[in-house]
Length: 79
Image (cartoon, rainbow, N blue to C red):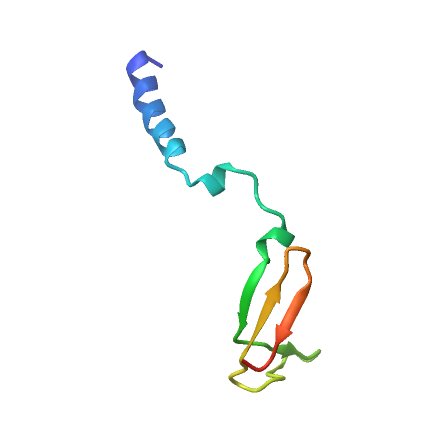
């Protein structure tokens, strides 16, 4: 490989690595840290052993859940 082809290949690769979002380069957060916050409940389905699906709270459930930093969930249904 000559110097020009090495430079031609390495410059775009270095530029692409520099432009990656920091979340790709940084260490992933734990699942516990990822779920902290407020969540809106919009869908729930149970799957029976025969494969059929059931909506236990009806077709349009509404509610919210808050997950604390310690991982404790706080639910509020309905919204």
